[in-house]
Image (tube, rainbow, N blue to C red; front, side, top):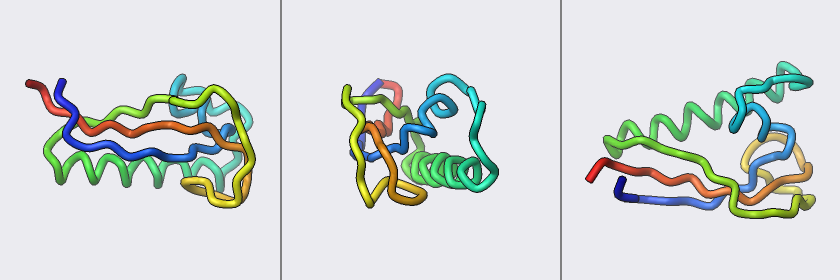
Length: 87
């Protein structure tokens, strides 16, 4: 796969089990909507670029921020969204 675009994002730690393992345990309705809205936005970008996308965790330490990728201020992990096409 060839990476055609990438962006760094601060994903709330509560969303990581759902994003990486399809585990929605303990996620309330509002948080679920925020996660799905984020995923849909990434899919729309991928569709415009005619490619696939993948999210990879790049940080090992969670930290607090007032500006996560979605939702209210919370603990986050640094991740990268890669937009890729087959070579």
